[in-house]
Amino acid sequence: MADSRDMYLVHNAFRREFPAAAALVRTTSANDGVAAARVADHVLILTGLLNLHHAGEDEKVWPKLMQRGPREIAPLVETMERQHEGLHEALGEVESRSHAWRRSATAVDRDALAAAVEALVPPMLEHLVTEETHLLALIDKYLTDKEWAEVGAAAMATMPKNRLPMAFGMVLRDGTPEHVAGLRAVIPGPAWFVLSRLGPGAYTRYARRLGLDRVRSAA
Image 1 (tube, rainbow, N blue to C red):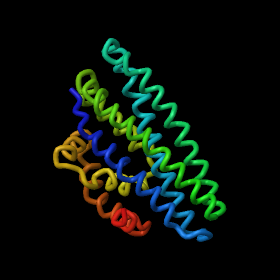
Image 2 (cartoon, helix red, strand yellow):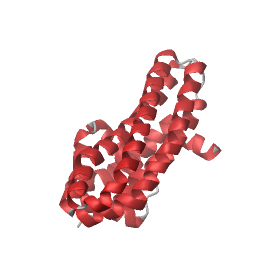
Image 3 (cartoon, one colour):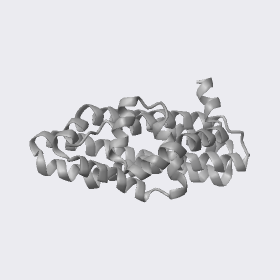
């Protein structure tokens, strides 16, 4: 059966990166168009990853769980739908504000984007906890390891190839050996060989260019 421990790696990346992104936006100088574009693009990468995460659940996880364990999954449906709807609206606001700031680089649009990212964080955290508390046990009970691996494979296939090593390194950062082992179990061997070696360095360089280490140390 499935082993969904790797989901903690993805969730912890979101927990770490979104608050750091809000701080990074706030500390970007006003009217610096180059910096605004770079940081806005980073925020859009994060929202894209979270949207991709939700799409994988909606398309490849929920239907199977509803079919195989309706009595256990039905009570979660209303909660998950409510949370996804709220997050969809919040993500849309963040993306709209990102594009506006990318165009203008003004302090007003910068602060509006930072506030939008900060507003997204609490409902996102609530949703992640709900998944970890209720959903992962059902995934492990009703999905096979092959079906669970297909969820990750679909996400990797959708992601732009030039961003894949960095995103992989982002997920691996701070991962416990247990959770990393769970991820390795669902990644094809050749892909794991390449990404596990290229990813950490790619993310480290990316974070350094953005200044993420600076805002994290100041938090």
